[in-house]
Amino acid sequence: MSESLADVIEVAGGELRFLRRLLSDAGEDAWERLLEWLMDDWFRLDVLGLENVPADGAAVLVSNHSGAWGLDGFVLQKALVRSLRRSLHVLAAPFVFGLPVIGPYAAKKGAVPIDPRAAMQRLGDGELIAVFPEGVAGLEKPFRERYRLQPFNPGFAVAALHTGAPIVPVSVVGAEESSPRIGEVPALAKLLRVPYFPLTSPFPLPAKWLITIGEPIVPPERPRGFGARSEAARLLCSEVRDTVQDMVERERARRDALVR
Image (cartoon, rainbow, N blue to C red; front, top):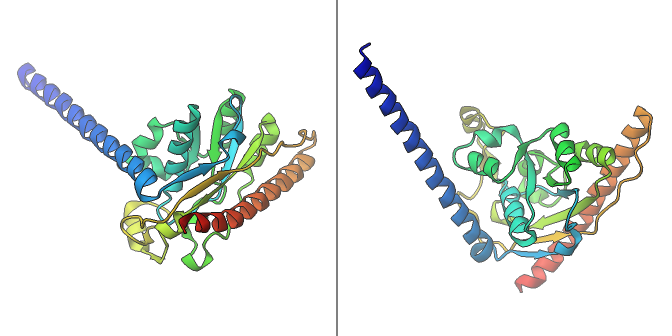
């Protein structure tokens, strides 16, 4: 290959990489603006209990996960960051980071793949993390089972016990109605290499959203023995799940009153 041709290919490659970055940045900016509009005008989002999030130091925010598209992770992160002026690292499933536009956007906003070690590292650094312990199961449940929390993965409780970070329960109400799961399309999920592809409204419906932040739950002192630690994590996980479920049921009534 001649030197001049190699130069042309190098320049062309650089131009293509620049174009890809430009298109990616434009897509992320469009997503940011859409998210702001959804929160403020479409969902008419209200956030209560911000005073329960520590002004500094580590904490684990634990929220229910709902709505077929999983928008609650993005809404929660943006709502808290712009109100608290603190960074918030949302633990997300690895496949999220491979999605066009929203994957790079999530990474830029501090989202990290689900990993107890990553969570403990950030808690050790005095940062805020947010987890959705139901995982994808929270999004897959049919609309008739809306707001019935699925089993929690106890990883967040293990991290809290290890670091001593308080757990802040969070309830999100509105996502179930804005993206009701009617069914799923397994063929599309396989094609796109995602856990599931929902059959739902292609654009979120204008349901009223309400995020409520409860009082922190201080984890007990970390037991020494492995068996004792496992039992302590299980009990803490159960306590937090029950707390979030109670909050969701209470806040549904509050949200409906606000809508009227």
